Image (cartoon, rainbow, N blue to C red):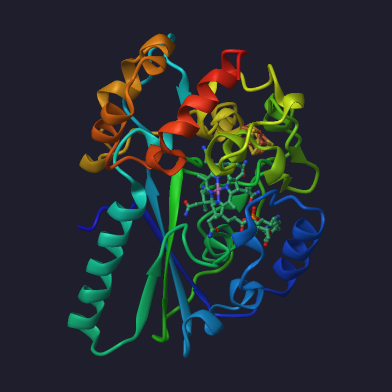
Length: 295
Ligand code: B12
Ligand code: SF4
Ligand code: SF4
């Protein structure tokens, strides 16, 4: 009814293994300029500090794999950003879910999150039995791949818990590691955020993209899907059926030149509800110049 594709539930616990992994990742500066990743360390590894009294983490997956592709002339944009901003779309669904639980069960306390709070969302998805963490760092569901957003609802409700996903189906495959244009994927499922195209094109604010990355972006103007596109577990991805994720025609069709000549006013109008707003017009123009070799 709410349009989520998979759901799993895990008991709230302090994530000790993850704490060590996260600490190392931060120490090595793999967050680059994403300073928000250094904040709220304790909350990030213990949901009961984020939501007092929390007993359960309900994890939900939402498919964003689109039914249409960009034209070959278009600067590449990550598939997650083809339609309306997922933060808004999923937050509304989480609020509806909380209301529904309150109506059927009673006065529970719960808060829903998607991508914006100190929550280790991939870890909770794995702990809820929804899939394994691939070598490319993404949560992969055995039936339907990795083109999914992860949302969590942290609640004081005690529930029946799913078993964590025990297996890892990456095996000897190394396709994502071999294909990553900037060598951001390291051994042991570690992705160096500070080397990822997604970081440079979306998160790096008001700064030029470092020169050593020149020629390495493979046409990606906003985000990057390479390590998921090459993953064999995504061969059978099915298009999503979320009306709000219907691709914006300009994302599918505009050529590099048309992007270059777009006015800020038009950008704001066309992309007013889109994840592309995050980089702003100036960020898109910077990325475009960079991939066209004159940034
Ligand atoms: C910061 C961030 C980024 C940064 C840094 C990436 C990174 N390596 O963390 C940048 C901007 C580069 C980025 C890029 C992308 N991101 Co991002 N990002 C996040 C964010 C906000 C935090 C992630 C985080 O905590 N990183 C710190 C590192 C240390 O943690 P981690 O990568 O999650 O890994 C943990 C677990 O995987 C676990 N783990 C690792 N190995 C193992 C092994 C075992 C056995 C176990 C049990 C656990 C485990 O340990 C790690 C630490 O605890 C999350 C949202 C959230 N709140 O979780 C989204 C999120 C991870 N991103 C997401 C997406 C979609 C992307 C992109 C695909 C977007 C794009 N197309 O451009 C790329 C993919 C890049 C990649 N290969 O990882 C989705 C992932 C969905 C999925 N199916 O996995 C999330 C969950 C957002 C969401 N709510 O949907 N992202
Ligand atoms: S999103 Fe692109 S740059 Fe980032 S790790 Fe995957 S392939 Fe590498
Ligand atoms: S491409 Fe291969 S190694 Fe990488 S996540 Fe997919 S199955 Fe695992």
